[in-house]
Length: 149
Image (cartoon, rainbow, N blue to C red):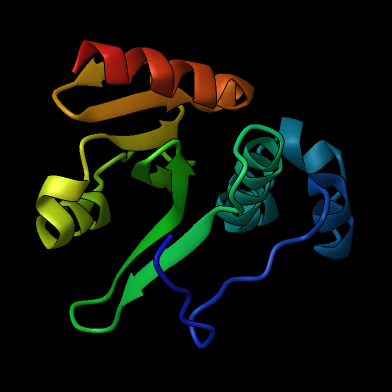
């Protein structure tokens, strides 16, 4: 990574269970479709993915955002010499406008974009979709996708 902008950051909990507890969510909220779970599932999903990434990648994942228009990429990971933007989607809508914007910004430098979501494993052009339940296999799946590009 070239540099960090310390004025742009996100805070995460050390553990998804701790986040759930601090958000005052009952464990039943996950299985019963509680309205509060719907409110927090994006943050819980991002936390879960970050926990997984910390064990897979040497460099700590970063965050990217722009003000106008408002775009953000949940994680920027470094894998070997590649910079890979990653978006986490916890809804059925997996539109990744921010990943497209990041690709337009850095063009040649971005060979692969990754989205973790509820959708199936799929490589479509330079977009790799990884199901959330396979987050712990992201590094391996990214390696396979890079060979296929």
